[in-house]
Picture 1: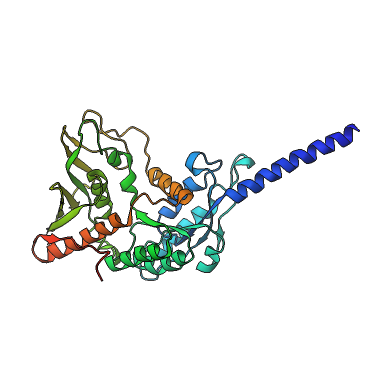
Picture 2: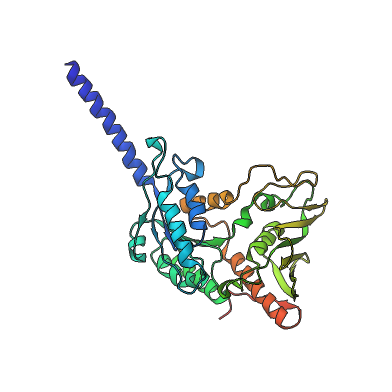
Length: 357
C-alpha cells in the first residue's frame, strides 16, 4: 500500500514536472542568427541564452545559427570562426548541471534556419548582404532585428523596410549607442531640461572597409537622434577635412544638431547637450548620465545590455522601438551629407526616402 502510494506520488510529481517542461518549451521564443562575423552575435546571445533568464530575458533562447560570411569583407572568415567557437562553448560547461543551456544548433542553409526559429537576428558584418538576407526572412513572416547598419546603401534600406511593410513583418535596426544610458538619459535630464540642441562626437575611421564607408557616422547619428528626441531633420551641411568630418543638421522646428567625426587624435563617444534649463556634457558610451556635470565612469558598465533588452522586448511583443521612418531619415541624412561634401559644404535638403522611386 505504502509502496503504491509512493509510486503514485512520484508519477504525479513527474507528470507535473513534465507538464511544466512542455509548457516552457511551448512558450520559448526561439531565435536564430543569420551571419555571425559581427561581434553582436556573441554579445546579445550572452543575454538571451543566460541560464535562468529573468525579467524580459525569461523564455528567450538562441537555438540555431547559420554562420554565413562574406568572401570580400576583411577578416570575415577569421571573425566568423572566432565567434562560432565562443557561441559553441557559451554556457556549455557550468559548475552546476542545473545551469546547463542547450547548445546552439549550426545549420547549413537559411531554409533550415527558418524552419527552426520564430524570429531572426542578422549579424553579418558586410552590410551589403543584409538586403538579400532579410528578404526571405521577411517573406517567411519571422520577426527580424538587423544589427547595425540596416543596410549599406539608402536603396537597400528602403527595400528592406518596404518589404517589411508589405509582408506586415516587424523589422528594425539600431546601434547599441542609441540605448546607452548616458545618451538616452539626456532626454529631459533635470539639469538640462528640454533639449534645444546637441553636439555629438565620435570616431570616423579613414581606413574603414569600402563596404562601411557610407555609414561611418551611424553610431553617433543614432546618439544625436536619441538626444534630440527623434526625426524631423530638413537640411544638412557637411564639411570634410583630413582631421574632421563635420555634419550639421537642422530640424524643422529650428533646432540644430551636429556630429563631429574624429579622424585624428583621441576618440571618444559623447556629446554636449543644450537645454532650456542648462548645458551639460552627456554620459559616455556604456555609462550613466552626469550628475552636477560629473560624468560617471566607475558605475556599472552596461555595454550591450540596454539594446539586448530592447531586442528581447521586440521578440516577445512584435513592437519595434525605432520606427522605420526614423531609420530611413538617418540614411537620408548620411546621403545628404555626402552630397553636401561633394558640393563644397552646400546646404542639402533631406529627401523622403520612402517616397523616392
